[in-house]
Amino acid sequence: MKTLLLAALGAASLIPAAAYAQNDGGDDGVPSNSRFQLYAGVMGGYEDFDSERNNLGIPGSTEGGIVEGVVGANIDLGPLTVGGEGSVAKGFTGDIDWEYGAAGRVGIRAGKDSMIFGKVGYRWVNLDSQGVNGRDHDGMTYGAGLELSPVDFGMQEGDNSNIRLRMQVDTMGNFRSIRPMAGLVAKF
Image (tube, rainbow, N blue to C red; front, side, top):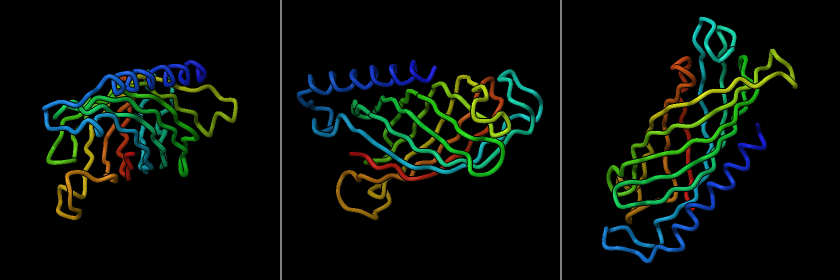
């Protein structure tokens, strides 16, 4: 399954590159050199699965603090942004050992450089209690969040910034977990 995820992420990364190569700019107010953006970030948070046994096969009262790395790409289409990202998280307290996944995102520009977004994807969870070769629990993920730019708060001059504060809340499966996260994202 991990190989399938990596292959899908690799193939998905070619689609934005092809779209960017055909872009010659436009009159929608977005400079052509900023339409395609790669980004990477680090976030921390906490995930708490439903206290009752859930449809993911994860035992009740599973929870823990996690630190997550994300890598993705966005295409700005005026006030709308579409993209995809991959993530890997390591548990540092509680029951979660590793998590990894991929998601698509759609965002709406808020101000000059900030964004409100929604995302849908798929995530795998590996638990400490099930050992190194324990099975991965997997399911659909849904979430929403926002990225706040220093430009929109008068902390930096110009129209955009390479650093954003990102806050999001995700859930997994049939709304069987809550996962608030916050951190910094840098775009390139």
